Image (cartoon, rainbow, N blue to C red):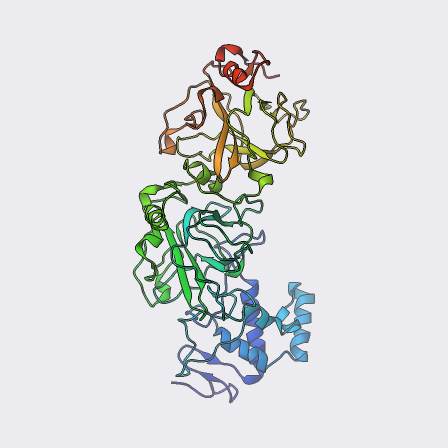
Length: 560
């Protein structure tokens, strides 16, 4: 029942009921702009630009719960009907000058409200609120992006369920979601990813949405791509996603990821879904029963268009085959037995590339990640110094192409994937290349004489050779998979591969089976520094045989 006026001291045009209050007409625009400012200002992101559970995330929607302050569409209508007057503008100036140091942009530039939040919706037929079953036309909506006013064409452009699959999720900062195209994705189409829960009736709006506009040449079936919060992503289109609403931040305590597009009528077409550290919940029209790591599974998705990983850790990736029909691939990807997980992973993309001998193609740029024709044994390790400062000497046994890139890591190879508890360094080969016969490498000393010794950049983790034994892998990325070039281990021999990464200590590693016998060296002497002292004359094959013979190596414990 509605009380008019709201109370004995209120203006005659106020109203209230058990859950809401209608302010006086001459204050409605002021109140609307204050609430819209709060939505804009308090977005769950801390001063460093990172999503944080300790920072308020106020989201105004047309489907408010008990913690929200109004209907978005109603607030937008109040904003239009009661524009800023001189008193409100003066207050905005004084708040900025004397207290907060910032302004309410919706007072200074009223047109920005609809540009940012979209157009208001109409009341339902009974006049009791707004339709919560169709996409909101506001920024926080899980199906709209800022300023996106029409959905006449939709964004699906005939994309169907299972045309995209999730093959990797990294919730350890920086967040990453790796996707696999299982059909040709149309140019100009739009994909959305969200960690908002699906209640069985609607997407919640307390978390976030990212949107990708598919490039003009489309995305070919079999291409690996996705979202990467790391600014220097090697993942194709990793940094091409735009803000779609709210604050997208995967929880290390479990979360769901839903991939979707919009049909021409504005309805949501779900394409794929995944949940980790939890299983799918039952549908419930009461959105408040879903925590931030719970979600129902959209009933429109076939069984093989979703994966549930309830026993997993923070980071998960598919390590099955990457060949077969679309349906065969969906069956494999939805099988949790084909997934691996890790609690401390910092480079999911590299991990995923190394987890299968048949990884799919990516469109990672040539500059940061391509082999450009480099093969096993084009580089050999000829020196290792584990006493500080660390040094790794390499010998080019073929001409190395300019602007390609090579990586070195002391992470262990399990036989299925590279671990991620140690470090990776990357070298962008100079434009004029590196001629065959050149000695170069990585050097942490402040005054290195080693060619390119100081030119390596950190890719992930911390590369620090152990004086108690370690392994070194040299590799490049070739067409979406890791191409190992050379490997060495010292104070130890190669271990047997296992899918359990915890079986390997920091001084143990399996030998990648893609490396021929003469492209790896095992140095079992119990020293800390090693160097090759054999011949530097002969063919590539002859030199590889000589370098792989530990009789041609010397060792000491000298720190110089």
